[in-house]
Image (cartoon, rainbow, N blue to C red; front, side, top):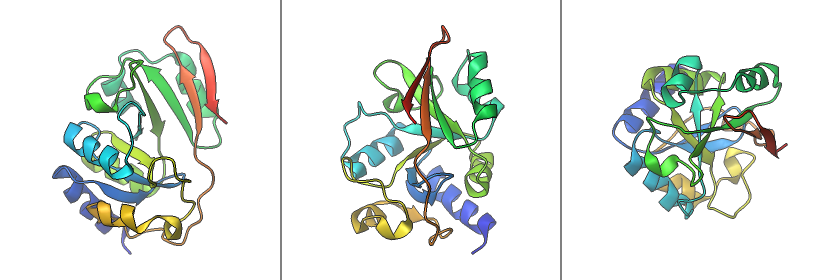
Length: 188
């Protein structure tokens, strides 16, 4: 399969407010345009997840980060530079994203991705991409495409045809940072 073709197909669906099932730098994810509240609501519905359980967004670099967060603590960049494994950072006071993505404490988890499919898709979207594990809420996170339930596969608008055989590593490390630079590891 051609990566550029898959990026194009996924982008067309996302642009119309659809949701996709796609490979990330960690596990398979369900995603949509992070600025579209209706698309975000579709994912909550598919996962049977309550809207107070926030989902994370993927970004492809500094520019996108500053579009969503006005103040980014210095330590956030250090953590991202030093992390060998995919790392999600939770930051305060996001803006320019769908309100139903923002956690009750006014934070948002983000991850900068280098994985080629996600990176290229983000370049095309010029907007952050929602990423949440491809499972019904409360069920185990699938480690490979084969483990994803048919309900999820049928429930999305497009399934990306890449890395179907890959077995994923573990989900990302999650670190919460507050604007007064407190650091808290949520998931190792």
